[in-house]
Length: 122
Image (spheres, rainbow, N blue to C red):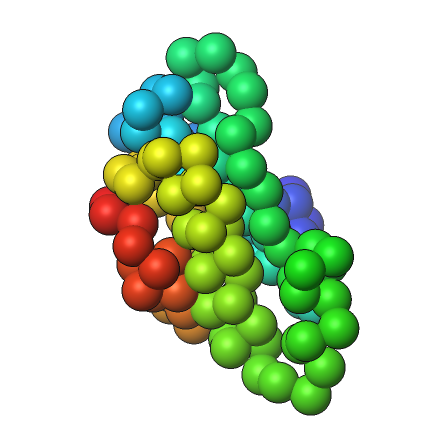
């Protein structure tokens, strides 16, 4: 087994372990985070119905022009604020945070803090 395959296996196991403990509903959706080298994506998912209630990313129309020249962690904070604004407009204030395979550190933490600043509870 090569080092790349081993790393992928470790990441898949971590994601499954985190995901097995988290479940979102219509009233309290799961906030799923994905981080690539350039962008960060977040979506609120109701697992009982299988629907995505809201989503935001650094590629969203509302943020695309405003993120030039700022750090990636600050951009992640803005994504969290935007997603929180979208969820509160649907009168959703409580969520379950799903960090996926990523550690709660850096950009993932900044996104969560931005969502908390805008009124989401988790």
